[in-house]
Amino acid sequence: MIVASVFGGLVFIITAYPRVNSWLNGKGAVQQVVQLGDATVVQVQSKKALRTYPGCYYYIIPSAFSIAANTPHLVYHWEKIDTGVEAYTTTTTTSDIFLLVQDSPEWIKQKVQVLLDGPYGYNARPEKYETVVLVAQGRGIAGVLPAASHIARISRRSRITRRIDLQWKLDQNDDEEWAEERLQTLIHLDPHRVRNDT
Image 1 (cartoon, helix red, strand yellow):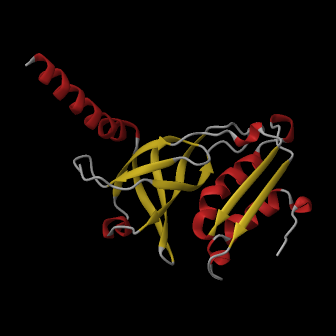
Image 2 (image 1 turned 120 degrees about the horizontal axis):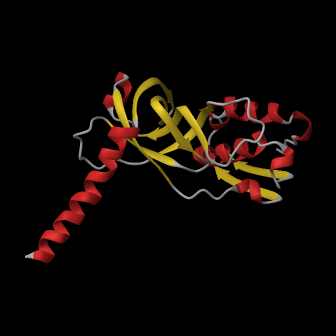
Image 3 (image 1 turned 180 degrees about the vertical axis):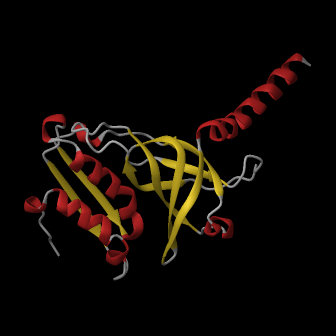
């Protein structure tokens, strides 16, 4: 009986903790929804600062009482709160994040109040390597652009990285249009060092 009670208590804590944490720290609202072919970029503005890093992902929960399992959504881009700090840290706090959502549910398009559960995922800290090779195919570019952008924003004195090699194989011709804004932002960070091999 004691073992069953302890097990039941642990299951409850494991299930309830993400929801309670989201309710306390992850309240936000869907601000903008942009449809990009079979994917959607959703801008969520949080009431409190969120931690982000390249490769992290969040769960979007429509309400505190939703227990349905949902899929994680990759953080595609974020707006940095403190742009005056020269040393761009490995973990950034932000109030606006842009999530890449595949097969977005109807409720997400209604700009509702949401809870954000996260961040999850391993922070590989790519700025600690002298040469960083990022490889993507098709829409997978969304997973590597945050890492490239993150490294490029760190001041040269604060990072080891001297070269970023981004290899991208297009699945469809419209893939380039889909990521064009983020690629242009990346190019403008260091326009003299970009080489475009076709």
